Image 1 (cartoon, one colour):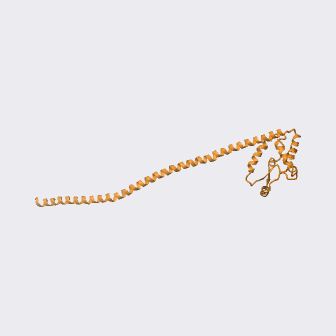
Image 2 (cartoon, rainbow, N blue to C red; image 1 turned 90 degrees about the vertical axis):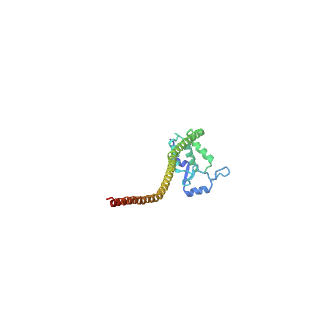
Image 3 (cartoon, rainbow, N blue to C red; image 1 turned 180 degrees about the vertical axis):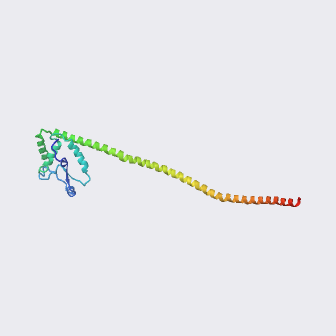
Length: 223
């Protein structure tokens, strides 16, 4: 493990909203041979936490992965820290990089070593990206796909219920038509029954009277 104290400070320089806005409005001038006194930008980039461009929680997760895998000795991260410290001094970019490398040389570190260690951290970030992508895909499957499946089930259920409702409505309409028909038949049948009863009574009365008349006459004439 190296001697990095604050890994986050090596990559971003947190500012308030007003400072970030001022930083966006006033472009930073880089030093050149024609303007040796021009201000030199810091290694760490000013980042406004409210800008939405850099997620602080995710940034800390990635930096934590780098910190946990910090290589032994003076490597890229220590080199960047040296650059960060030198950024506070009035020197151009080339001088800053050469001065930081001079410190690396005292520890027998070559430019190849620095580049190789930087690529190690790029590989670590690549692994973190894949792990994050896999996690997102898993969330997509468990949270989004499950809801899509439930939506499909509900849609199918609604269609089936609609068909059942349509079938029930057709049955209800059919039964109502039958009821209306039966109501109309009731009056007709009742009228026929009453009429038949009346005719039976008349016929019955006629025969009864005829027979009774014969009985009366037989009693009268047959003594």
